[in-house]
Image 1: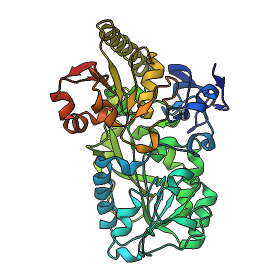
Image 2: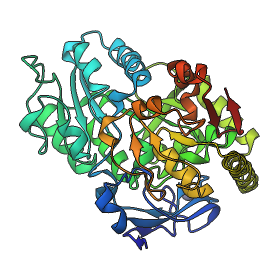
Image 3: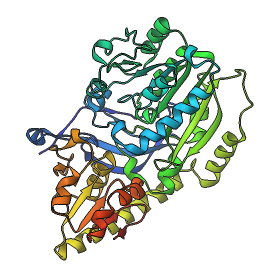
Image 4: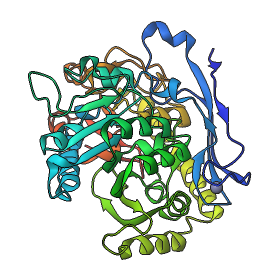
Length: 437
Ligand SMILES: [Zn+2]
């Protein structure tokens, strides 16, 4: 029996304070998507209400209840460096950030949500002083040689390349106005503030914006990547909805919100990787620099044409999500009737949402494989399926694998060509159910 955990219900919009929130999707009471369980934790698993809401006031799409950051991120299971596609992505991101500095060695770059240093490392290797802020204690602790640097923001650790000591500093905390001011007092203003995906996770964005404003140099850039609301709708990525993903951003909602802090968008780009991510470029309003790129207004215009500012669009989306669930469950039921063995592939937050929403559990899947050793031997939230290394599937290949990591489908299919060649098949759940064999 699951117990309802602590959460804060939001009856008003996180961006504009309007009480005019409309429900788009209701997932019921579900476990945390990233709450992988040791066997002895299963009995005490907590669940939390999860719903997706649309603000009629400012059009921000957001989850209706907030689970405390302490609960979500104290022990986090997402290690970016274990995903090879991302390592190349962050090298490219670092090239772009450092490319704007005439003298990289004099530049100071701060990352919000630095995870295991997957971006800090290439930044530091390109010569800038790099400092990350991240609340996940176990992830920060995994950075080899970081030792006593973490925890208090007092690290000096810049440019030290001896032994295993990483050439960057990490503050093990949430990025807030208070933390930003402490960093500025110790290290000076940031020439760039960067962030990859973390802004989706933040309940109190106003506090983060005040921090950005306090820390950013007058001519500094705030460059962040985050999952785009337009992709959620276009590709039916309802599996991106979980407690850790508090906000789903459109250019229009972001622009209005940032303007209230004296910040302006001067460019936006689409990234080819990770299904529907945009890279946004922000500076102090009126700061010198190139004129605002046409891409900003064009995107806002396109959002209006697509109806991203209209509740009807979201209600139609909800209908399509329900249909998708019906199709996936019919496919799994047919295969089980035929006596097929099915395993899951990719024990991610997305997997938890799909399993919670569709009702997938041990009746359908034998186990879930994942490449991250930190998850092996743990159990998936809600469905309580054991997470195993790929070698388990190799030893006794299941007939089908349900590809929860469907946004990485091309990479997985290439990597697991041997499984397919041996007669194995992947079930791709979204945007439409299809079988690859
Ligand atoms: Zn609002």
